[in-house]
Amino acid sequence: MDERLAKLLELDAPSGFEKPVCDFLEKELSRFGKVWRDAMGNLYARIGEGEKSVLLASHMDEVGFMVQHVYPNGFLKFTPLGGWDERILPDMEVKLLGRKEVYGVISTKPPHITSDVERNQPIKMDELFIDTGLNQAELESLDISTGTPITPSSTLRVNGSIVKAKALDDRAGCYALLRVAEELKSTRKSVYLVATVQEELGLRGARVAASNVKANFALAVEATVAADQPGLAEEKRPSTMGGGAVLTAMDRSLVANQELLFLLKEVAKKRGISTQIKKPSYGGTDAGELQFAGIPSGVVSIPCRYIHSANSMCNLHDVDQVVKLLLAFIEEF
Image (cartoon, rainbow, N blue to C red; front, side, top):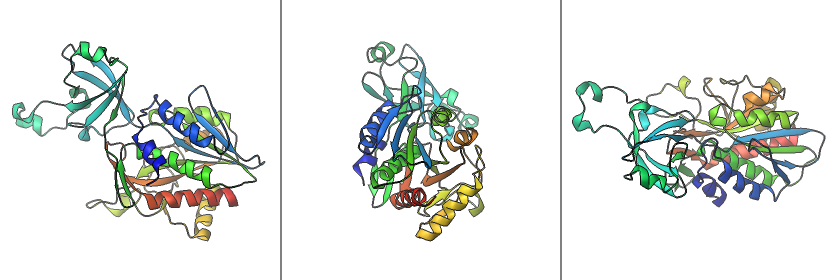
């Protein structure tokens, strides 16, 4: 387990609050090339000075929440930052990022005082609260009020090559960029590594980054849904954890550039790199905005189970395959 990946996974950076991750990546990437930020908060690193260029983008933000209202007794209403499955929220431990970190639990009405009808209905986010046990005055003394960001609270666990943590989407991609920067010993091309903001709120950072960097090709380096679990038909499984790098033919944000997709497949075959094609067309990535800017774009992803939750999971062998594919592509495109 690389300490850099562990650090990336432990940092808290919900959409719009990416600075802790940006600061860490800036320090790491500055060892390998020129580094700068834009007004949106995106981070750029350039390695090499060649005429041909490629842009690799990973997003720094994670799904989280924001305080919407604080009641006098300290209970908090909250609103999502990014897409959440309401089914998994009750009883989740969360961390409020005030002047001091405060832990709470997402609470709902106890089952003992609910009706049979209520117990058999899905719980809506609007019916949930966060309970820290503190009252409004105590929370305000810690700078926790309307607008305070919130993240899931999770413990990083490692079982051999398997990592369980929050925010693998897309800190695993950010880590892959660090690996590429480190292992790209020399290049006659220009390689732009871009860490974007607010992807989970609609690819906002990528929209700005696409106007700042012009490249021959662009790849979003992502974490994608692995659903290789019992009870799900094979044709409905977007990817398989342990199956290698995931290539996207299409998703809700783009149809991948066909020349680029062909090149990725050919390079992987030539180098013996494990790949799989994502199916069906779920989700969207920064590549959609990069393509809108006129850059031929595609997606290379790390398959992760349970993304957009407090406890996602990936196989480090898949991360290795993604890094190998990116390095080979840079060398051969």
